[in-house]
Length: 299
Image 1 (tube, rainbow, N blue to C red):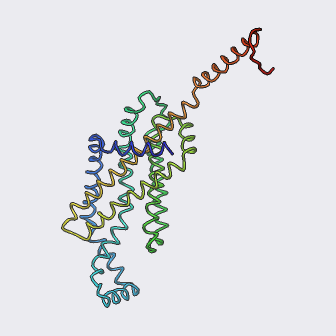
Image 2 (image 1 turned 90 degrees about the vertical axis):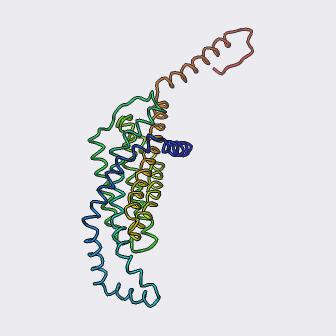
Image 3 (image 1 turned 45 degrees about the vertical axis):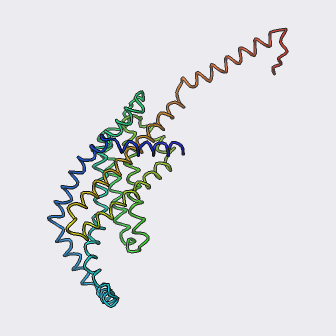
């Protein structure tokens, strides 16, 4: 538990470093260009499709009548943009996570290792290609889980819980692997992931819920068209910082756990214990052979 909280606060402090903030701008520029470009070409078509589907539903039409009688008929104007936003947000989050993993995580892990663990041996148990396949495989499973759970999003409590849980699981899978791929061997990585699985999964879920917060800003961009160009890049930048924080948290936790594992398995530690036992044996034999000694030792 001490390792969990120690790595958390270190990650928070590292997020304030100018170098970390500067690293977040490259994926930010790419994500903003991608999001605004897709929005420019497909936003109107997506809204028209959603509105057509809503108008074709008898249940939704009855709902509109009820809302108008209640004096809340203006909600009809914002429902379609909100549906599009909630449909697109998981994809934005997943792509943001992958961009941070590809463009930021190696540099952030190197920063942590350089400042805290300069003597930690790099056994390179993971490769860049292996990391890419691991991330893509995990992303595919997360997208399938999001797709399968979509009907449950109609229940108000679950829409606030299920997507962050799935994002958190994906964050755990991607960040834990990348944090250890450079320094740990394959056996060490498997051992650490097994030993600290609950802690790592808890870290991922926490970051998943933390990453859900910018969705409010993202949705506001759909409601306030005049501020759309400002609010959407702001939301994406917050995504980047959240995932940069998670990358630093996993790096601090993973490298500290790796150092502790190697210290525990070090032959030098065993030799110290053995040497101490030998010294005690020598003293015991010496005293037992001394006729003037009153010390008694068991046979």
